[in-house]
Amino acid sequence: MKRLIIATLSGLLFGFVCYSFASSGENEVGFWLALTIIAGRTLMGFGIGISRFPMKNWAIHGIVMGFIFSLPAAFGTMMGPEVPGFDPQMIAISTVVMGMIYGFLIELITSIFFKAKIK
Image (cartoon, rainbow, N blue to C red; front, side, top):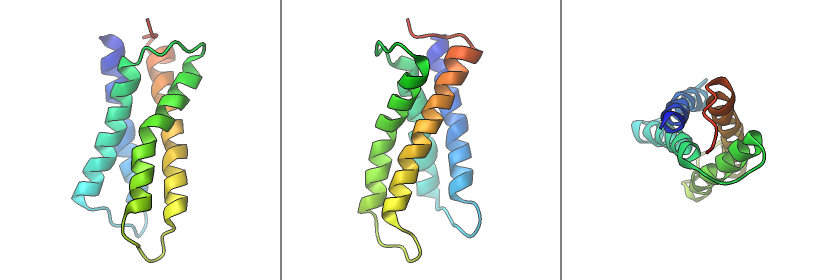
């Protein structure tokens, strides 16, 4: 239970971090997109918290889970409407790469800092 709570809260934290990156500069992020970003990263943390995949390394587990949980959002950016000045492929790639980084960080916080390892 400790692992689930820590990973989910870490996902929520990184959801707000991801939202702040998405809305930085001239970018205007609407309510629904902000909610989707925060919920997606929180769901990633929840998934990492409940995952029982037998991997030898906590870091690989976080990266793989971050990759898996970022794919729907990446495909969503590819299917969305054309926005002048934005390259959908670049946004999709950065969504997946950042998801892998967030997955790694969630797993780092959960497994190493709080010592809530996969059982």
